[in-house]
Image 1 (cartoon, helix red, strand yellow):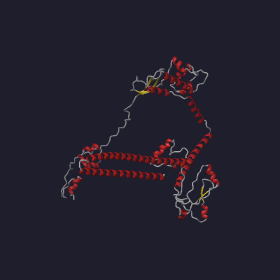
Image 2 (cartoon, helix red, strand yellow):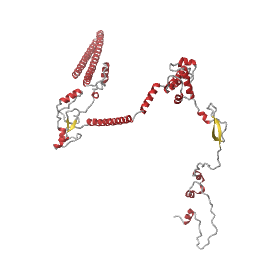
Image 3 (spheres, rainbow, N blue to C red):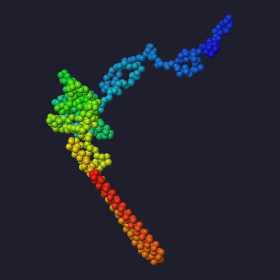
Image 4 (cartoon, helix red, strand yellow):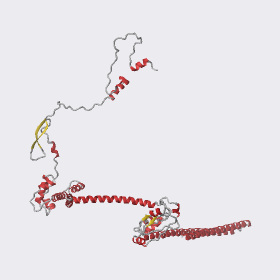
Length: 496
């Protein structure tokens, strides 16, 4: 445990005299007083002491921007001076307040915003060659270009100030059409220093369609001149269109749900009674309840309903006539099966049930049909008759390809057998020639002695016996291969 001296040293408490009756020393102990730097709390400074001066610089308070001096020391003197705008050509002199420190000979600062457009001019020769028009004279065209230059192509002001004494009244579209057509002709017929793309871009900036502008303004005027009744009718039509779109989305959603339901029926629906009207299915619930029979869900049919056979009803004359008129073909379920999920046949498109050839011979069938100009994967009119004809055509093509493959196999076997037979015959001929040469040599050597003759006769007999055995083996092998190939051909023909 810490002693009292340790506690006093930690808390910086001066030591007192241990004798109780001893007088205290007069005067206070000298303690070095150090000022706490800014940015450090009192508790932190009492812990670290004055030995870490670097922390004071890091924890110093940030100095904010000095407040503006709003006292009367920073006064600005203003003067009323006259000035001239260099953008004006009439030497008009006006006055305004400016700071006294501003240079009196400085240029008017707002003169730089006076930007004028490039107004084209033309000569008499250019007008005679390119710009003549039956509805416009040269004097009226000059008057138009002067107004455009004066009012900086502000067309509503130009149309308001346009007062040329002519017999025809000029609309705003007439003025714009004449000006832009003249500019296009001048750009197109004058020599151009830049590239062709910039020239085309400049010509396109002067494009103006007079008829389209008139049609646009007429449409805007018709919209502005609508009566309250027409506005109400338009609002009602808009609401009706939105309602029809909403109903169409709802019908589409219900149709998708119905198709999913029909495609996932687990039973033959014994509670569904067919009505005389086409495409109408109603469930006779009241009769079932009166008879005391519990209704069962189609998704969880009972054992009795699953085991009950399907009752085939005779189609009425009305249904037959309706199916004939609307080209509807109904397929009956097989009577031997019970009403299970496998017996249910959902609705489908004939184009989705087109026959597909076998994968092994599909390229050959596709090539054969392509020579005839027929595609087995798509029909323009997939009717019942066309689908049946396509299926029969695919069956005939498949049989033809299989027959062709069998014929090629048989021809290949026959060719190989003929080659083997030719090789055997050549080997036999060579063997016969060698035997004849051996007999002559044996006869010549027979005169040497009796022992030699016996050896030559024995060798000749052994050679003949070997040749006969080889010949019998070759004939038997040819017979066996021919028999096997004949049996294979008969089996393939039976399969076809």
